[in-house]
Length: 408
Image (cartoon, rainbow, N blue to C red; front, side, top):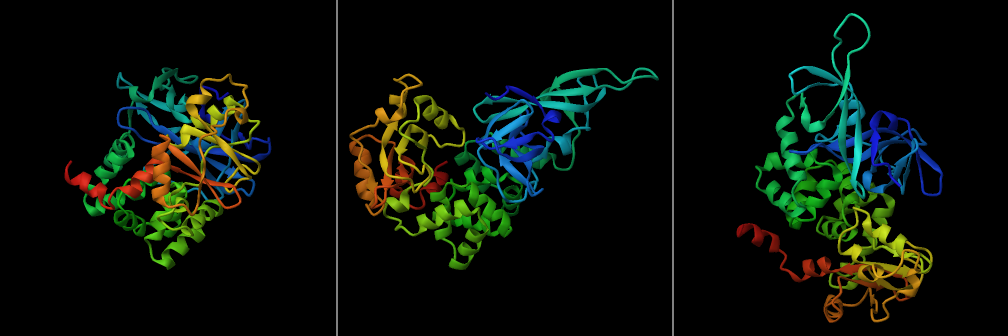
């Protein structure tokens, strides 16, 4: 179980391990983004891998923190680069002076982060030291919430405030807010947003605006953002770029992410293969209800993907071993935690083939009231799922977002 509260200074140098217990690095810092009326949100950690390269670890990949160590599902192999809107708690906040409510100054000696929900961490309390009251010893200490103290302002205050405002909006609303900005300002904000947040926002924009923003970014940064997008959205975006530009970005992307995108690009846009996402929740038949629900709770899993778990033979990453069936979230809730998911398969749901048309996929989803439908290849291996939002994006006119904006 994750510790509900962790002091950041104690995280420095803590070992990072994979679920099998192999050491894969150590923590060097905690990455946060500001919010308007709340303490900063933790988006990830800076981890020094075994090659002594500092890489970014998304907080969504952290499985547990406690006992002086951290367990994560995976870490990136790309060097960490701090964005303009990000703050490193150890490098940028510790040692800084803040002003208490009574107007007196204090130094931040430590601060804690707390988990508010699965994969949702934020800055909790500041451990502060006040000035000395005499010639000897140290000044007294006190605890305070982030919002209870005044932080030193700087030239980035306006940008931080705008970034914090965007962070609190739904991705579609944040996209609209960005498009309302002057062109140059929009590009500046895009540069300062974290990779995952910019990816979320780009997914809610028309392809023309997506390409416009990505073209304004350095190739390495654009590839980082594409890594954070859903593979099907990244594939749609790259399909609208020039061949040379698309290939250049694919070469810079994480190899596993790029492989998924290349596979999707090989399918026709009007087929199940072209519509699907390659990252469904997958479990072995002897996996338990408790394991399935834990996978569904991960905050980075989209709601439509969290509606069901796919059961296959090994391997358990698309393309998997033979597809066995699907178990819906509602059915999982009716059984005890130790029940095997292989006994709960929905016998009515038939997978679609990658070559099936979008119309055939839509009819199946409508006939069985499905939120998602599994997609298999000719060998019966699970390669992805088509979700209801994939179908809606396909059925709506290409400029539906622009139409929505014009009526706002």
